[in-house]
Length: 177
Image 1: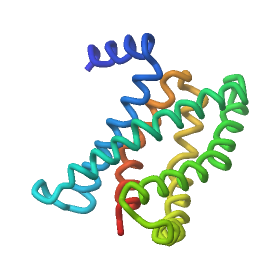
Image 2: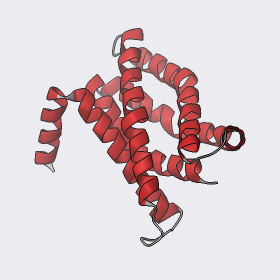
Image 3: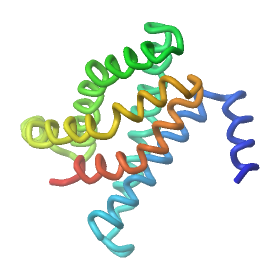
Image 4: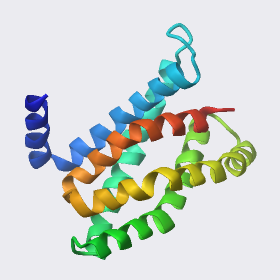
């Protein structure tokens, strides 16, 4: 395990952006597998590999780049490392970024699942409030710790490790028709 962590740190120092995107996509895929197998209990024969690939592509193309860019912007917008700074970052993250991000995520997933604009809006109206409330139960304490203790290059990784659980929930919520 120590060797794996050392390799991760070496890659992070050489290719932080690429590794953050790869990590986000991979963990979105893991979250979908957990969703299909443990939450939805589909079993291996009914597992949708296409859905897992779709969730991974959302991680690679949307989640990783957007979250990575947001953390960089937030670090420039609210510089420093005090408890007050961490609290300000968490408030901005949860009050400004999270609502927009969740709405975009659910819309993108619905679109990739072939929903019409009307059905996507209906699904968004049904699922968005529940997803946002669930977000507020999980993420504020995680983000306080993340913004106070974790260096910028590792923030997305920390979020994605916690997000294995969150991604399982989001995958279930976003793919529930």
